[in-house]
Image 1 (cartoon, rainbow, N blue to C red):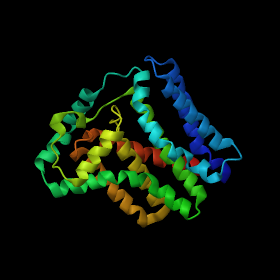
Image 2: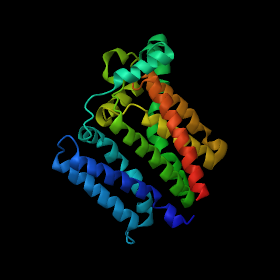
Image 3: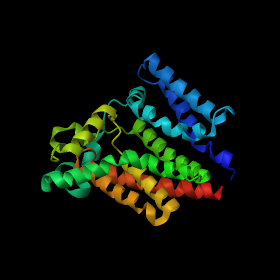
Image 4: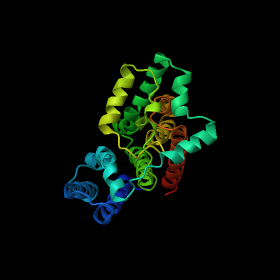
Length: 276
């Protein structure tokens, strides 16, 4: 598989996603501000230029999809409105939690173990997500393993795109929007997590948990490329998933399905790419 071809896989995936969602913005059920459409089309054009224009530096071509993630996540509420998904499906998902666990773990776990130390540790693991996103690509790029970098970035972006697409059809807010789930003990790290979520979180993106899905994907990649040295990423992923539920940010089923999704995407995508 030619490394130059592999280098544009993540860009090509993002171009397809942006083109499809551009159609949704233009002909969706709800009116979308012209500024939102303009920004979306500008990003689509920028990614296309980064992928195919020969004057664009190779480093920018490779990193462009990851740099676009902040916009893609922030845009999700606009896409949900355009898709006409104004009714959140929390009652359905919380019902699954009740049927599977006999309780609501997003409420019950923090009530059963009201430890500030435990809360801070689990919220710290949850916060590690932002480092987990970039650590594998950054290490591969720094070590000059560009083919592995391109492969890892494609798998990572495929996980994000799968989650973002799912939210358009099945939006769930998550328990953190309901007072009964705010039972975890307060602390410095929890306060940081809450401020980040209040500033950056998109309502309707709880099921499946993209945090857990992406962290699981990165765990598979870390072990694949670095062997035992990648196990700390897997350990943080377990803590992240537990913290997502303990902190009341996700239903337990969000984390379970997110982990399954991340695992399946990583294994299948890697197999396909290696076969190619």
